Image (cartoon, rainbow, N blue to C red; front, side, top):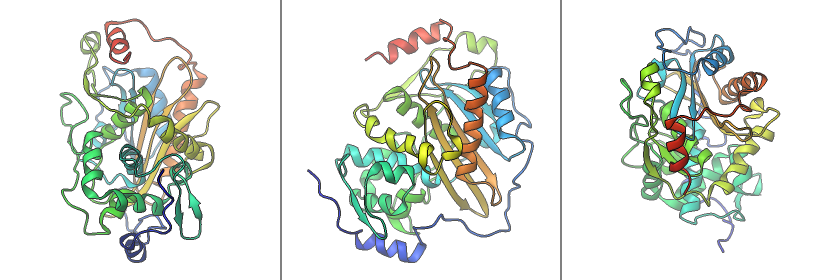
Length: 351
């Protein structure tokens, strides 16, 4: 059995002292991106689920950002609001990176459900608390314990540094560093995603794999009715995380129930992870999530860019509004139509 760590390693304490891991990494203005914009400008919606599209646009409102909704059982992108932003080169993932770090730590048995790290001012905390409250000390400590090579290996396995989609025009692969960041090393990498560029599609693919039990699909984005009719799910790889998901999910549900994502709270269970930081004078607010009730499963990723209002809790609130709007329309209670795509998806996920 792994013992609780008595105190953070020296490298983590140095990073805390120098870069303030106890606080969100948010620089001051002036901001280079507007907080409000028409986020639908230039979007092609011919192949989208228009019920979800309308709900996503309503939930996002006037904020400058992107909403990506994915069917986690097939990898189909159901709606992509602000396609230019969603398909861009990506942004620092902020604290959403903690999900992949948690899976790496559990895979390597660097922590277990009973493992607690002793952290300054908090005593001993476990993974559920650390995910729910997005504790930077915990994940900086875990990252130092794992080391850069292992963190990097699992990050790439989970989809970082490569395109999440299959033949989606304009999609970029994001970026993952080849060495520990100069700014705070592996501690900052694992708590704030330092030097990582994550795309909304990459986070949606990862959330889908957690939601469906471990299948990392190529995300596909039908552009018209013909594409939709011929759509067949494509598996990128199967992840050996089925036994880890029940350990990670309580912290993600805790984020919504009592942690950083409380604005997303709804009548049904939602699991998710927020992220807040700044990059090149642009404030970033992330939320990656999935629902846990009903016949239809849905992954929702929100990315906000702009000034100080663009934060993870606000992104969580937008996702929560999307889930609520769809719930009022009984979207999740409806059964999916039987199509070649759903039949293939059922076979893909049966083992």
